[in-house]
Image 1 (cartoon, one colour):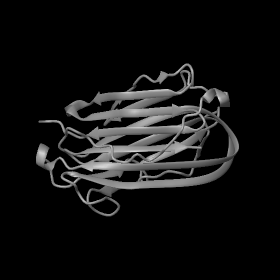
Image 2 (tube, one colour):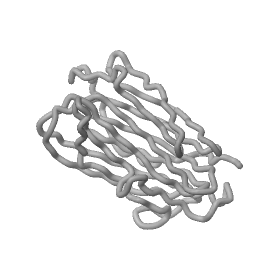
Image 3 (cartoon, one colour):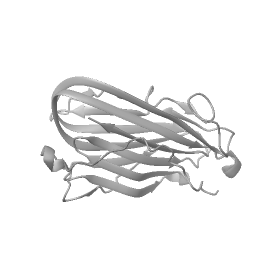
Length: 226
C-alpha cells in the first residue's frame, strides 16, 4: 500500500513576528513540550530551544504507528507570551477511522485581563483513487465540538479554558470546505477571539485532536496566542 505523497498544508493562517521571550522573563527551557498520538501509541519529539530567543521549535518530525499510519509535525513554534503556531499532518493507512492527537505546552506568565486568539484550517485529501479506500474524506473532533482546544494553567494545574476553541467537523467538498481540486479540498479557516480575566497562569496547553476517515490524509495549520 503506497503512502500519500505531497501533503498540502493549505492555509498560512498567521503572520507573526517572534519577540524574544526574555523580554517577558519567560523562556522555554525544558518546559516547552510536544506529544504525538496515533491511536493508543504516544510519541515524544524533542523540542529545540534557541538560547538567544528562548523560543522552542520542532521541524519535520514523523511518527509511524501500527499499520503504517503517520503523524507529522512539519513545523512548530513554542514562543512563551505570545503563543503557539503549528503545521501538522496525518495519513490514515488503516481500513477504519483513526484517531490522531498533537499536544503542545509552553510556559507563560499571565494574569489579569488576557486577550486570546486562535485560528486553524484543514487540507483534506481523499485517498480513494490512490489507496483504494471509500470515496470522500472527513475529519471530526476527538472531543466535540472542536478539534483545537486551548487552556491556561496555574502552578497548581487548575485549568481555565481560553475561550478560543475552534475547528468543527468537516467533509471535503462540502459545507465550509472548498471544491475538490484533484483529490484535495481546503476547509476553513476557522478563528476565534476572547477576552477573559484570571491567573496568575504559568503554562498554556494546546491540543489538536481528531478522527480521520480510512485511507485519507489531512494537513492542519493554525495558532493560539495571547
